[in-house]
Length: 450
Ligand SMILES: [Zn+2]
Image (cartoon, rainbow, N blue to C red):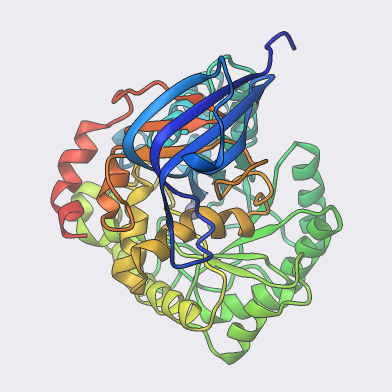
């Protein structure tokens, strides 16, 4: 309340505003004016320096001809893990023992510490907004509130709380809570909303990392009636539903039932394509695809000795990789809205490595660098329903941006180590504290081959 309004001018930069409207992407000799009131910094002006006069007494930050672009958004992350493979202690526990551990005060404390660290690691790497799509209990929401109430600036977090699955389904007794009928589904949605989630995440098919049989990843688990009840209940309250979904059958059931974002994805036929583009049961009349390539890249690129996955999980990973890239290519060809997410927390997928997913959109989907940047910024903001606040650099939106040494449209590697991260108009203190050397050593070679 006592913080007075103040204006800061970021000058002398090349601005990629993220609107991607014309061929002319970059504003040369740019200036960004940011007005901060009560800790919230909003963009007051963005454009060429000749179009604005810098107010007196305003703080000036000279960006030395570097490049500015909107802060990255990660549409698919989990906070519970930092990318380290499952520890030997955890591997020894039964699912029930693990649940007990996560519920214990020590377990909860340690998990929440990791979650907080991961959120800040993302921010320091330029991820100014992310969506956590499945974490134990409601710890993600607790962490979000603790970060919000701390004096240090934190990322914007959209939290799903625990994923909703069926008994024995994907994430069961870990990051998911089970329902076994449409009405149980409705009740779980009501509980989630009561507990402060920002969206609903379900698993309508099986997944790779807890599969015990070949073919389990992508097997349709939740029934159409259960998915439809969950979507209806969520949409009544204005909440979006995201679904972990890795087969064509799963896609059909999820989309027909009204799921808003398909996470990961699979091969699409004509019905699936048309449901994505026009989905009468979805919240906004269309659905979007959020593939996650980084996870599968490391799972398939590293030996199971290092990922701590079983041979069956590795084999399922191979199946899913094919499906996911097929789905992504079809989506791009048919103008289906596409998000960008990493599945951070999976083996070797760090929260500070989000930028690498952009390289995989280029590699696996054949997008341009420009399009990959758009997926991570503007498209993500629209798909997540936060495009009035973030996603592009425009007057009236939050001043969330990153400053990098060279033109990321020319070379995405510039995103790997931002010169500066600005969140809500505040400059985030630069640190390498979040880098995990054990992980970096293991993936060095794979990262070079991207
Ligand atoms: Zn996930």
